[in-house]
Structure formats: structure tokens, C-alpha cells
Image (cartoon, rainbow, N blue to C red; front, side, top):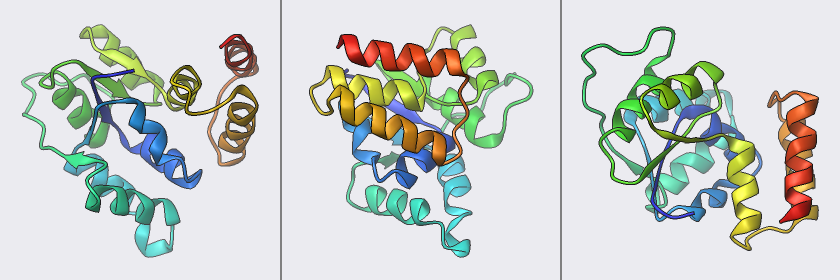
Length: 165
């Protein structure tokens, strides 16, 4: 997958927890916003290692922080990180929004943005030859143990898709 990713808080946290931030390297460029980064970094004082992993990725240039333009009429029901990520994605050429929240996914699709959630980014890594299906299954199970929610139907569909790649 090429182009740019504009990544929200939840995918950064979960990929950081799994020590899999490099999964975002299926994109040519990876951006997040100050608002989303602030939400991630809120866990740092409590010792959440994923905050430190995300900060390290920012410091080494793997993730670029970009400010989002203000929105005249933002979609209702979204948090500051989600709103800023959607606004930025609308301004970045060839952008894919990486969000996990269903309301944010629907809002992004509603304005014509491409959307991927964390498990699908992991699946993209199989297609890119960066992960094999067995490893994907292990990482997907780790994602669930880390607190990611997905229904059994989606879980089985992802495992089936991984097996076909």
C-alpha cells in the first residue's frame, strides 16, 4: 500500500502495545496530529510503554506530526484526535485514514476518505510481504489480548483473508 497514512490515537496505541509500529511502513508517509499525539502521550506518566514507542517513532521521523486545518462543521460525536485526523486526511494527497472507532470510520467514509483500521493494516503487511499468515494470526490474537474489540465474524473473516494471501 502506498500513499500517506493519517493515523489516529487508537491504532498508534495498539500498534505500540504490540511493538508493531513498523506495520505502518506499508505507507510511503505516516502522519498524525498534535491532538492525537497528545492523547497517546497522556499514558506516558502512568508508564504506558506504547506512548514511549510512539514518541520514539516521532523522534526518528517514522511518524510526522502535522497540524490539521479547522473544520467549519465537524462531524458530531468524535473526539479531538479523530476530528483532527479526519481534517488532516482531507488535505493530504493520496491519504488513508487509520482509525478504529466505528463512528470515525463512518464519518471518514461519509466524506469520501479511504479508511483502514488496525487489523486491516496488519493484513496489508501480509500482502506487502512483511508478515506471513501464521505471524498475522499470532499478532491478531495479541491485539485482542491487548484489549482491541472485534466481533467473531470479523475475526474469522480476517483469518480467512490472511490464509488466502
